[in-house]
Amino acid sequence: MLKVKYPRITNEWTSLKKKNPSLAQVVWDLQVFVKDSFKKDVIITHLFRTQKQQELFYGKGTKRKSPHQYWGAVDIRDSIYTSDEIAYLKEFLKAYDNYNNYRLMKASMSRTVLRHNIGHGMHFHIQFYNKKGQIPPRQIFFTEGTTIVA
Image 1: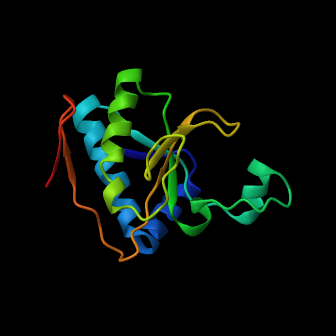
Image 2: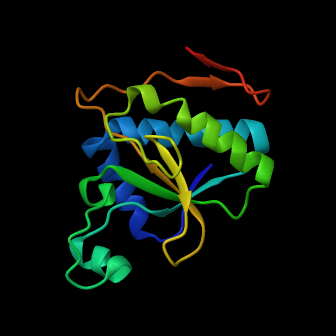
C-alpha cells in the first residue's frame, strides 16, 4: 500500500499524477512490487519542495536545485526494509534508468534511485522524467535478480 508521512503529501500525490505521470507510475509500480514481494508498504516522506524548503535543507540563499522543485522526485522511507529488500528495491528502480531523461547520479550509478541522508535520516530519493511524457513500461521483477520488461 502507498502511504504518506504527512497529510499534505496526499494532495501533492494527486498533483504529481497530473504534472509527472511517468514518475507517479514508477512509484505506483514500486509499491506493487514491495507489497507483492515483501508484504510491506511504501511510505512517501517528501514530494514537492519550494525554494524556501530547499534553503532549509541546504542553507539560505542556496543556488542548488532539486527535482523535487519541478515535480521530478519522490522520497520514500527506507528504515522499514531489510538490507536484502533495500538491494532489491534499488535493482527494481534502476530498471527504469533507460527511460529516464535525468542525468546519472554518480553516487548510485543510477538515473532513477539514490539512497542517501541529507540530515534527516537515510531514505530513497526516486527521480524520473521522460521528455516525451511517456509512461515507462511496467517492470516485472523476480527477486532472483532477473528483470523482464513487459
